[in-house]
Length: 194
Image (cartoon, rainbow, N blue to C red; front, side, top):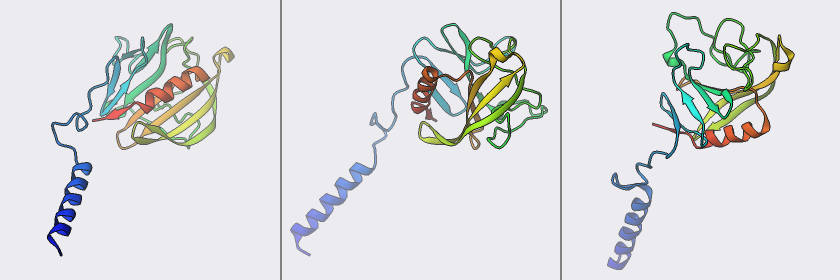
């Protein structure tokens, strides 16, 4: 092997190594925290739309994990099920059961932007409309969309769910409609994990 060929091999190897690793002091190694409001749930960091809020804990517990915007009190809920009461019975989220987005063992309520937790009618049924996997930042979550019927038919709506079983993070979008669906998809695309 000639000296010139050896120098070329070493130069290519060093260039490849420089492209494949990022020095610890480099900003790309530690991306800046998103500016603006965000929800931090377990290892999940979720940037919120401008003007939106996240209620980690409310005094009555009804709005725990709620994302709210404008006049809607709870458009979506982000919960870390690892923090659930270990003595309380729980149903793990699943697209294999009718109320698969609901981790409780009682009957869920029909939460919508117009009927927040505590004011919502009892759900009477649900039908799975769509299931599969959907992205949350770099991860794939179990995804489902249900058509929910309620005691008060004015509260009939659709519910979307994303479930990360390893992280045990559940995201539920209530009162699904096209405008909020697009915002929710954008919000989830910007998710990061620590």
